[in-house]
Image 1 (spheres, helix red, strand yellow):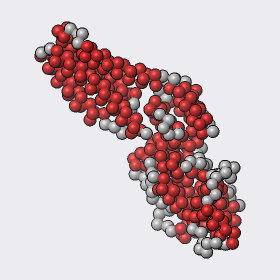
Image 2 (image 1 turned 120 degrees about the vertical axis):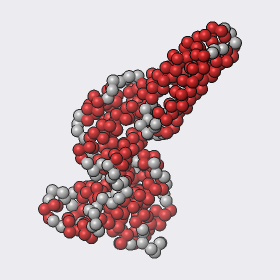
Image 3 (image 1 turned 90 degrees about the vertical axis):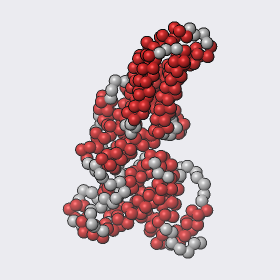
Image 4 (image 1 turned 180 degrees about the horizontal axis):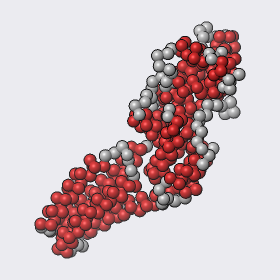
Length: 195
Length: 205
């Protein structure tokens, strides 16, 4: 299966380098979900996200000639997406490792924020709640969670994208999930979460 | 049976092995520590509840799509690109050209079938052209393999300076030694450009 995907990607890249615009469109369609996830998780400014996704694919196109299939195509594209987002965060002086929960508030303080029943209306789904909490985690944790749980990447693949050792990826992932679980427990009961 | 409760890390590792890294449909190895943990889980309601919470969390995490790109995004990106060209063919052709030039010059020098006086005269007149070609070649290479994190000017300054001096020397006096010098420099230039190319590849990977 993996070999088949690799073979298909090789043919796709050859077609793009041979000058087939349709093939590049196919590549964008195949990877826009992955790139979108990385960008939407890392970039807080909504208006910049789409432009950034576009920039990433332009970079992919410009550098495709140097891609030698030493890694998976998706890993290589995700790496470009991550680096582009990292540059954006550096330029805007935004944190990568800092907690994004409201400043100066502990987990216990957050409970009162969500106690407003109106805020709950229409968002009674676990995924929405989990999503909200991920946004409050450090950016790097949210990115790792997305890559692991949504794109089913291995520690090694995530490590290649983020340029981190496997052990660090694993440790961040465990820490992120623990943090997420604790925060969700503080905010909601299990029944509410599963509702 | 183990007596202490499972830690968060142990519960997560257990779920990772069972659900994410080795999905149930793929038969994976049976871990001894998993058996040990399972035995504890069968008898411990606290750990069972923790496992259940994590299981819910995993299910929630699998449904946290946040990307909402417009439907026509792929078309939009494709239109924003510079005109499509056969990039790989062009790159290979240019690399082959550089190597072929180096090889030919080297061979001509080795075989000694060169009329030195004619070559010396030509070298003098073409030195300026060579200098221009070098610049053009580097520019082409840079267009082919752009690296935003790389300072090209820093690399080119000594090369341009060197080519300027060579042109001056050749303009004042020409002889077989200068032809060899030019041939050697072209060879060096080719190797140097290939090293940049190789370096950029390694850097990207």
